[in-house]
Amino acid sequence: MAILTPTPRHLERAVAALRAGNCIGMPTETVYGLAADARRPAAVANIFALKGRPADHPLIVHLAEPLQVRDWATRIPRAAWALAEAFWPGPLTLILPRRDGVLDAVTGGQDTVGLRVPAHPVAQAVLRAFGDGLAAPSANRFGRISPTTAAHVVAEFGRRLPIVLDGGEAPVGIESTIVAVGRRGARVLRPGIIGAAAIARVAGALDADRRSPTPRVSGSLKGHYAPRTPVELVPGGELAARAATLRDRGMPFAVLARSELHGAHGLAIGRSARDYAHRLYAALRELDAGDHGRILVEAPPRGPAWAAINDRLARAAAGSGDDDAS
Ligand code: TXA
Ligand code: MG
Image (cartoon, rainbow, N blue to C red; front, top):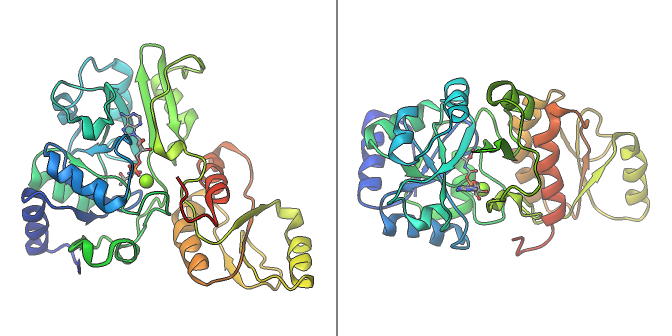
């Protein structure tokens, strides 16, 4: 296992591994990805084997630049180009009608494909040198917390993944906003740091029709992004009382709080949504590793800036403490 600094020689080594059909760990601005050649069935099969992910869950194809979308998607609506222009390179994934020849293993057998142009300089360097699409789910085992550092990726896969490029802490910290663009308009399938209002400003009114076909999004499973330790979401005003109750009962716990730890063991995490997102997964991993019995999370505000964070926390709470969160 090697964590490689992204020198020109190491980048060459990573790209050679990709050309040989192997997976690498690759930083993006959202979270680290487990990347492999999206055109090659055996390479894509390696991703599923490493992650332990069910075969019908589609993968996002990462591209160096927006025009490459034409190699993967067809009948691209104007709103999709507008979103690409506004937010790429960046933390946005577009779900578009797929072109013939895109692997079923990548699309999960659906007639759409997920595409993203990441902004992270290391991802950009790899994609440019590679020259075509790289399928890359978050580099965690299925159902687990997404990695935001190279060390997290090593913790997930150990020696089974020989190359992880080190791009430092992923700046955004949570996964990309996923938007499906269809005839009835754009729909946000997974909230992210680019909010629904920003999407609507560019793409026009969002499609809120419940009858619109819903593609499979594994991030939409209830118990995703889950620590092994049970996670309990506690409204801010009730944190001190809940901590006192657990202490009285002799039940061990740690706290993930936005400001005050109320004398409990734990971590204080950012007051702004951006800072919170940046640190969330690393904080959950750290508390999960500490064998605390339970993690009390002070619930953040409900406003739109916090939508993606509340989404991930709800899933973490729903799937936690269960070793086969799926
Ligand atoms: O920020 C991100 O998106 C990260 C980095 C590595 O790019 N990737 C990521 O990939 O989060 P993954 O595989 O962990 O989550 C991708 C999500 C899944 O929930 C999958 O179901 C959805 O994208 N997806 C991919 N292709 C799709 C499609 N054709 N239709 C609907 N959902 C799709
Ligand atoms: Mg994932």
